Image (cartoon, rainbow, N blue to C red):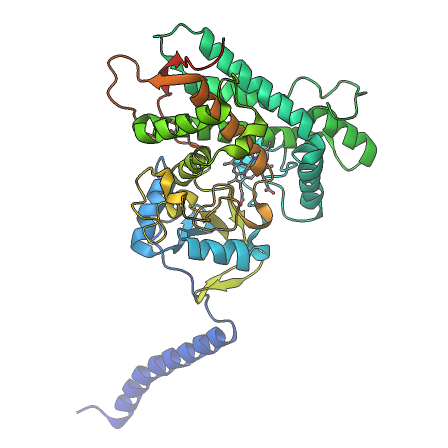
Length: 437
Ligand code: HEM
């Protein structure tokens, strides 16, 4: 039998680690009480280093929607080193972009956006703060607002007319690449010529965007050359590409939905009669055409994940903690296809807006192609007018058919921040006979 001393030592050796564990556990609990571990939203397991990057795929708006069906409309991911939340429902989008808009309206500083935006000297990628406010005011008041209206009006009408003319000149029966034509029209509307280093004299209504920026640089002293180049880059990237993608998708959907095509054409042709072209002042008379544009933006928001935001302060949504410096991705594409907000969400059905007051200007979170809150797209009205004007003229001036031998249109999307069709939209345009020669 063991001596009592050996037994005591044996017991002590057993008890000490247990006591130590209990002590450490108590310490941990107390530390947690003082600064509790954040309760993060649910999300998939992450891999070392890359986190969940491997789950994004080629078309992240599709992959993220699929993941959200498993983990819910507020999901937590780790994209490389970046803690990220992904928002996939209109309710959570309202929480982020309305209730917690101020806390979440920064932009993350990404390598790609820094390169693209001249070191974040632009409006889209600059951090939230006084400089952003100043640049945004310049955009809203001087560039895309009423001050520049007459210049922008005539520019848009000229460029749409030029596109219509070049379609008319292409031989009938020969398919045209409408995607390409739309992109060059949208680029020309933003007219960014080689003005940057010219001396500026013009001032007034017919001033183009570059002239305005250079004049403001002189007058206010607030703008640097980097700011000017950044803003011009925003206009090109955020403005042209998005507008042309919208018309491209609208024409694609109308070609696949001939009833909607006929209704839209009948409406435009009835309003315009034999006038020969649609002008901006005609746009307010269209109703069906506006539903077509909304429905296109619902199914094909040109920027399906909007532009990433970043939180500046801690806040809570549905009991989950959202820490500061968390990246915020809002899946506008997924939200536009939510079963709980839309009947038969996959169907292209412009009539769904007939008895609905839902607009796309950031008030109704089930339709947010331009974002919402403080960072909402400042070129929204400009963008909508460009899309409506171009589409109305395409529908008024031509009947459209698929090239011989094509049965249907490929709906695949090309990867990118702005989502275009993977294969360009090639159609045959037949001049409408009801226009006076
Ligand atoms: C169909 C056309 C367009 C669409 C769908 C679109 C969409 C968007 C979206 C989703 C955002 C991000 C909003 C957010 O973070 O909540 C944005 C921001 C922006 N857009 Fe647009 N846009 C369009 C046209 C334009 C045009 C024509 C311009 C200028 C000429 C423009 C300039 C900008 C700028 C400067 C920002 C950054 C705003 C900021 O961060 O404060 N966009 N746009």
